Length: 369
Image 1 (cartoon, rainbow, N blue to C red):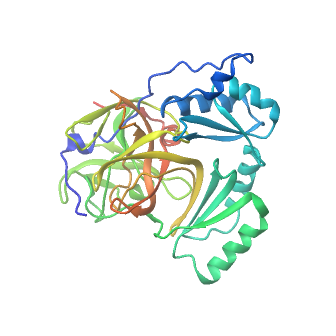
Image 2 (image 1 turned 30 degrees about the horizontal axis):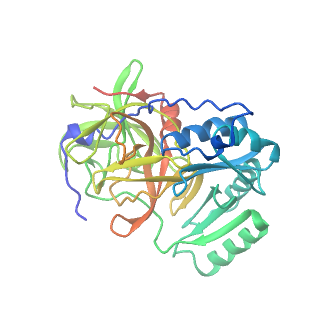
Image 3 (image 1 turned 30 degrees about the vertical axis):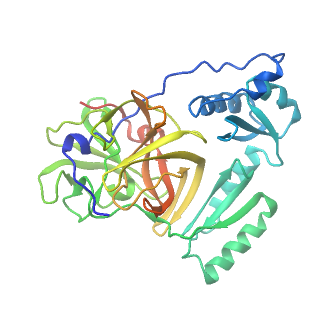
């Protein structure tokens, strides 16, 4: 698919973050009626309630997920004593085998093993396991080694295959061109830094090779990379060197712009959007967090896994909170497009670098002008 170009205002508007309007989700008392246990929740209120409950149940829980069929939040627990708290808050408790601490420990142990390119892994709340995924390039000796590693963790690890190749999303044809490297990427979020020029966040695998940025191929410089991190993490900070409009907003590719007013971490079940100049805007759901991806170029940890599609050139683009069935007036930045498998014609899986970690590491805050 040939990417379309957009003006600097639109290209650089794939930016910033905004916190969703707060919903009152204070857990009910332990004496709440059983009707509370069957309360239907929206795709916005369910992740917010999940964050509240998981914070309260540290050590007794193993993640949560939203059941769209029943419109209920399911909270995995390892201690029956937590059932009352979960039901009183309006969620459905599910007794599982492995705690979140056990799953996180297993993931950490996998992270310490020699990386096999073409694989991903991380805790999966629905499966109550650490799920390892291998793409079609993992064959022969690599596949045998992966199976042996998975088997060594026993029942805590589940292995799956994907039919499409895992890759970084970087290629010619994006909104922002590299002047010193023939590639293009998408802008993530515009940011501000105290006492320094404004800038934007994009993918680290873009920033590693692109040091000077232009609006169009062969055009004048509008920004330069001042910080880039890949692998291990995947973000870069570019500093504006020209006077261009850079609002704190995301291009929705429907003629509209979505203001971004803050940043937060993504939660499993969040309804989200992704904006990139190759494929425009697509929507989906957060499937898992704290995921490890083993690209050919190296391992990246702590990523967010979604069922949103993306393609080469969408790298670095904005990942934000958004429910197309209930469009918000403004939104929060969640992450930066890293890579994945599949495409926007057949579907796929996309992974995102959390924006909060990128902001903290670059000393920046969401904002534009």
